[in-house]
Image (cartoon, rainbow, N blue to C red; front, top):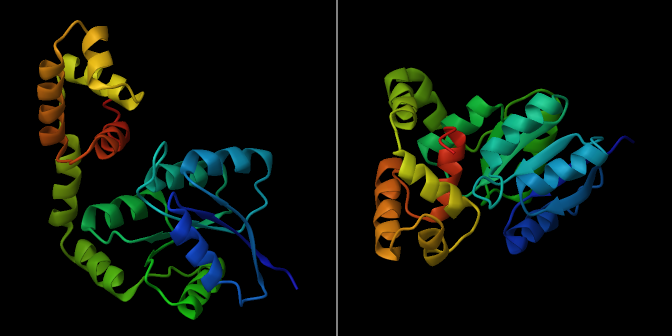
Amino acid sequence: MNKIKLAIVDDNTFLARAIKEKLSDFEDLDIKYMVYNGSELLSKLEKNHNLDLVLMDIEMPVLDGIETVRIVKQKYPHIKVLMLTVFDNDENIFNAIQAGADGYLLKEIEGHKLYNAITETIEGGAAMSPSIAVKTLKLLRYPEKQESLSVQEDDVSLSSREKEVLEQLAEGLSYTVIANNLFLSPSTVRKHIENIYKKLQVHNKLEAVQKARRQSLI
């Protein structure tokens, strides 16, 4: 019997183990490895891309799930990707599907339903949690909402100084170090970061860096 070769990509070890546990009773699944972010997955795939399907989280450090899907689909189109996440907001669904995700499930899914979704996806289906399916239909029915999501992404413009601050923030530098590097006061750096968060409509450094990279701002 050919087993389905899987990988789990999730920065939350507890949740990754819980997913693995949910699937432990199904003998035709072979979980090859669990990694903590998209970058680690890509390193593994470079050495060996003999994999059938990836269960992918969205919000992760270094390389988020949406960017990772895009790269995996370009380099290894034979690998199916199921988003498995706690986030069901329209923007994530839209971006994940646009990036090439084969399905979108919420982490609260029961083990047997997750197994069915995996086998369905391997056979060419598109598995979705019911609430996600409803949102996806709405996005298709009301494309102006979809366009507004894209416009929201495209309309952002950062000043050259804000880009400099964000680039250094992306490297994990502290406000004080950034201030020294750019010959600014820490309070000015803080003000720039507040403006960046407002423009990108995010609430923390990780979200800011991920969104800026997605939009090629940095």
